[in-house]
Structure formats: C-alpha cells, structure tokens
Image: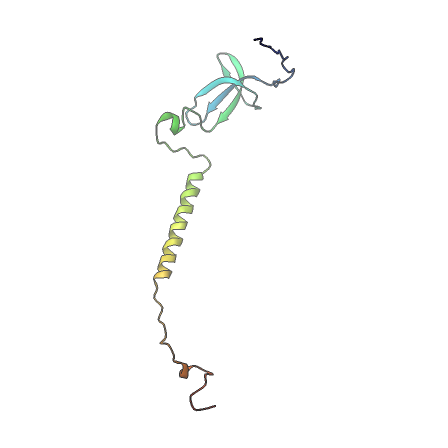
Length: 125
C-alpha cells in the first residue's frame, strides 16, 4: 500500500498586514487585555513603556455575568429599561382588555316574528 503525500504551497498575502498587538479595555472595570488583532482604532494606551492601539469594549469576560458567576446587570444602551417599559405597557393593555371583556352587555329580549318590523302579520295580506 502506497501513501501519496500532496504538498500544497500556502497562499501568499492571505493574512492581513494590519495584524498587530492591540490592547482591549473593559469600560466596566478597566481591565486590559493585550492580544493581537486587525481592528482599526485611533486611540492608544501605554503599557510597560510601550504604546499600543486601544480598543474600548463595554463588556468582556471579566465583567460578563456568565463568566463571573454574578447576576450583575450591565446595560449601557438602556435596552433593559426599554424591555421593562414594553412589558409594563403590555401588562396595562392586557388588564384593559380583561376589563373590557368582563363588562356584561344587556341584551334586549328577543322579538317573536309577529313583532319584527316588516314581517307579515297573520290574517293581513
């Protein structure tokens, strides 16, 4: 049994030229991460006397409740407040609909055929 090994040359210029060390900073607790990225930013920060591009993030693994195990609510854009307002409005609408459905209507007594307008009365043709 023979094994054929096919060697393929790696593609040139596949990776971006902007891949460089970048600092990500969590705005909730000011934790910083130094990693490599291609993200574009104009901000810079100095760490250990070296200046790096800075990317500010609203939430990271150091402040996200899933990773920290805390049920801490971090809401920068007010999404939770909007959600609560929609829930409250829905509750008010549901209560108003229940109230309207709970009202009893007074039905007028049924008229027999001889009392209806335009009906033929017995004996008169």
